[in-house]
Length: 231
Image (cartoon, rainbow, N blue to C red; front, side, top):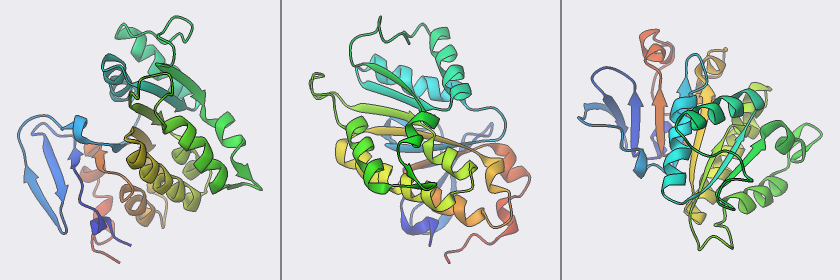
């Protein structure tokens, strides 16, 4: 198990100096000017300290809609409502009846997961079928790419099912790459502060091409409590 098994396109800790943390075989730190290159990230995860990052999530969807991508929002109801309010504030249409057909789809995470669980565990075959359907370019959309904003893995992790959350992230990462889709995930960083969950943070991070952490994570020294070395 190692966070270093993958070279990240970008890892950012939000600070005034725009520090990007790059993992390229071994951990080192570089200060790189300019904005985080979101456009180059296919499977991003945003760890947040307090409120769900509705602004960043809505920008991910709004940018996709501006580029004529097919956008899917699959979030628990409070997060979905926050993102849709942020999208409306940006002047983005969130009413499927009024939007361009196939451009915007909103789904409820709880409802989606209910059809993928068997005896409380994720059925990977069902999950693969559902994700293939979501991430495949729309047949009537001229092959336009898909953007997925989702928190099903985060919901599984919050419910105490870390193994299925990690497996789902791995599946999403593989299918997103095969379909040329872009995916935005988000987790409350407090969920990893429970004893024994630092390695879950590493494993979930390893299934993403870009990571963003809140500054508070580092200020509190949470990761310093366990050595940042491959196991």
